Image 1: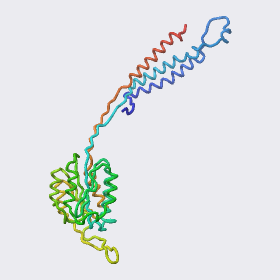
Image 2 (image 1 turned 60 degrees about the horizontal axis):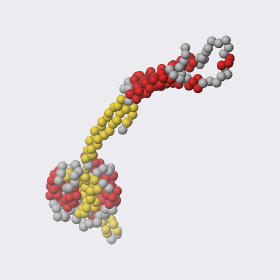
Image 3 (image 1 turned 90 degrees about the horizontal axis):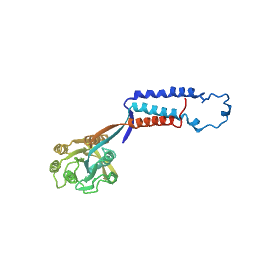
Image 4 (image 1 turned 45 degrees about the horizontal axis):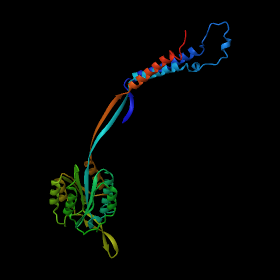
Length: 331
């Protein structure tokens, strides 16, 4: 597409100021100029009709001025430029594997671990509109909530419906990771990523977490692991005869296991002890996993003086033709 017009020799444009004195000179030169004949009495010509040539005689000067303007602009060498971009985007496929076990209801994050994880993950999804993303939930068993999709509206809607207790309780970290790997293993994306978020210790499921990590490594899948929860104890809602009350429960996260999973797959392990820390972790992952964009810009310049030069020549030829035919004068 044509971006704009530039001039290679813009200094020549100052010659356009010549149009002003030439116009003033022409005006004063012809203001009182009249045709004349040597006769004893020219009164008989005063009342005669004026020819159309009298009214159009100034067209010769206008043609010369137009030719001058066109020649000056042509000397300034106007140039148009066409440009474009060749863009290659290498897509990223991401599956979020989210722990929905009962311990995710602990309230060391606000309003609780699960809701905080959903809110931050939703912001992460909104910030990556060009990536395919999926969702796996796990506790004592695992379930693919959303397969890989670019329809993030559906993904976000399904996120909103996640609740603890949807599936059998427990913490099957290996199954949660293995299911996410299954969703990514056939992907053709340049980068395949699992974000595994849990707050506990593997105590259920049929797949050993390190075995699942080895499988992920074979398929070139990088795993970022996030341990959610404070250090020490965390308030946990417990049903009592007096209603739901908060009781401090011991926080148990198998950090060595999560670190090992991340290390085997060339990922990273993070510990989220607060809502802010969890948001910072997702921001860090967002920076680490950015789509690679190769942009090749090209720009071509095209000389545009030729049409102006042809126009100026045409104006001069027309002025010469009219001056020697219809507007021919006898001196």
